[in-house]
Image (cartoon, rainbow, N blue to C red; front, side):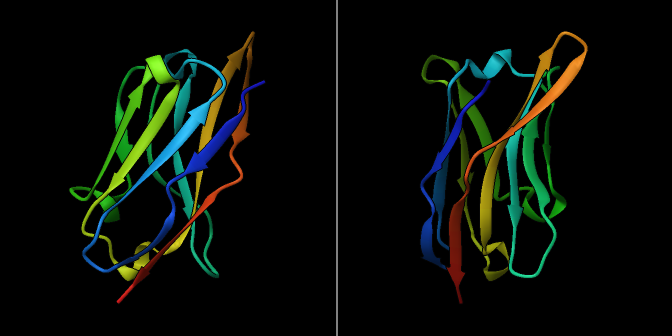
Length: 119
């Protein structure tokens, strides 16, 4: 079982920056996929950024050039640096991970952290 705990959310004005952290109970590199989703008010959950097992990092088009995903295996922590934030980035942000167990892919989610961007 993988436990994920997010931190770093808060309120910021448009144009500002926030850094999110996701502490995992296992080494990040041991996971098949790991990353961040978000869900804004009245919206469906959408992928923000993730790292695939082959090392490829994916970003949602709306955050490309503004958000940076990184990980620290020594600290079992995934980071999301969010720059030039916009009001439309307001959402609950969730860390997620996929662990390969034999032939199964098992998903895990953190409880989420709220990000509010004011105009």
